[in-house]
Length: 426
Image (cartoon, rainbow, N blue to C red; front, side, top):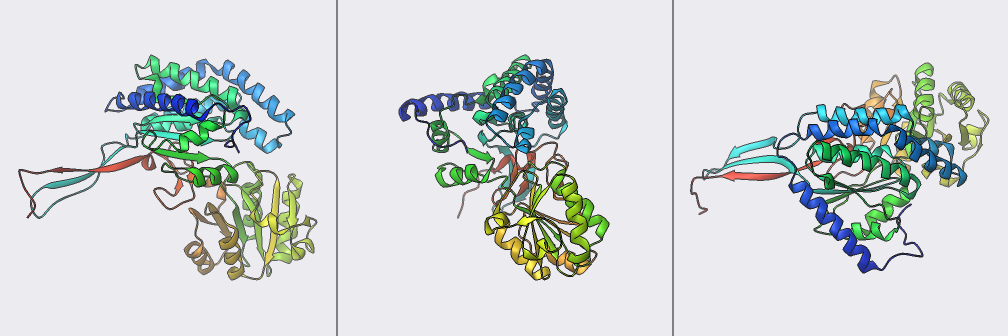
């Protein structure tokens, strides 16, 4: 987590003043954005990223080397790593955002008051959006691109782990903005490693309109507990896959492997496998073998251990977001027990059931309280790009103001425009 003060922290007044100046620049730049589409800036950002690919990859290689030397798990190193293909994907994501409809000035509703004035609810920018996130450099570009498309300024605070990568990415994006005639300051990066800047950003009420943390549980908890500005919680994913008594074995195996193995270091990968005891003797050995074959370390309860080779799970395992090739396994008596387990240990992110029973499927979707609830599909689909949003700034696990993958539609707010002809209220 990147929020505790460092021993050599600068005086709080210096940090607050420096940050206040940065936020003022962001506010001024946001106010100078054109009222119409900002797509030329997004396309110019994409071209600048492509032109700077070699420098970005070289900077990232240093970050990766330092992460490995620090003993960072392979799955987390993979989240950090950039190569030419990933830089191209990031650039292409900017262009995909440019292709999306402008989210601003859309009339969500409209009506006429009995006294005469007309009322319209229209979408408008937030203004200045702060992002505090851990070691995924693609978030640097996704956040900037989405904020720009939504008419807001992005103030980015990445982790020290990805510092060199983020500096290179921000430099390229700002060069692209300048080439397109847009204010560079609409993308700001807090590059000073002093963690006091996190606290100052969370206290900058009136200077920043929204803060979105994206990272592990400790980062999210710190932001939520200390923020004096509006916050949207994102990302912590203790996701479950429940194999019901009526699960098709082929479907169960395919989904379990995909949901855990395809990219284990992301928040929509499953961390716990629940298996109905009626299906477990035939199903669990097969699924466990398929997972173990792909390098997954299993930790199970006593009933799971009796059916397949695995280590013993502890109470802590049921609440753990591993973000690695480790999976907790529990054999449960029935659907009621599966629902109870998910309710106790889930984080409201993504939950899935494999079943041939329509009744069980509908009950699971109805009773599970999560942003995304799947029947016979992998939790890996909980993603803004996969949902057709073009990109995402994070996956909200709360219920206000957004829930689930946050694309452009969730990065605007609204105001009411009222027009009359001299009416007054009685």
